[in-house]
Image 1 (cartoon, rainbow, N blue to C red):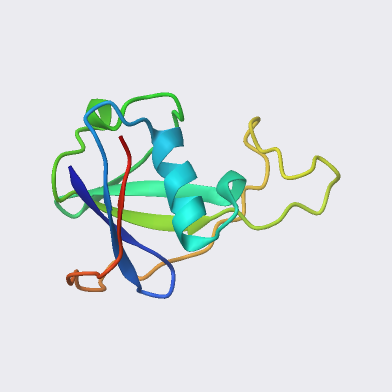
Image 2: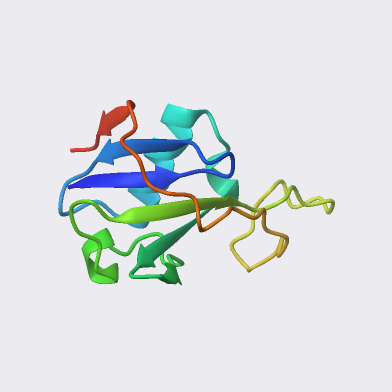
Length: 115
């Protein structure tokens, strides 16, 4: 499946994934490709104007209804000021960056494959 990821700057890139790819796999690949901190990534799936936050890292993308061409918005948890080393598994770090959801989708030139 070819997925479209849009980051805060409006930049779009594409990632190729298999049917078995989990949310954690996708975050890991985005982190590697875009040099972003994996533990701060928040993914929202655009489904016809509505958005779903992908909270379950071990859940396969297909269980969220992801299919070829799905569009994701990438948000970031702001760095925590407490001393938990960025571990937000318990829902900490509630501050989230904002992206313009009205930005049109266009073809990106960056493609990564997850097998």
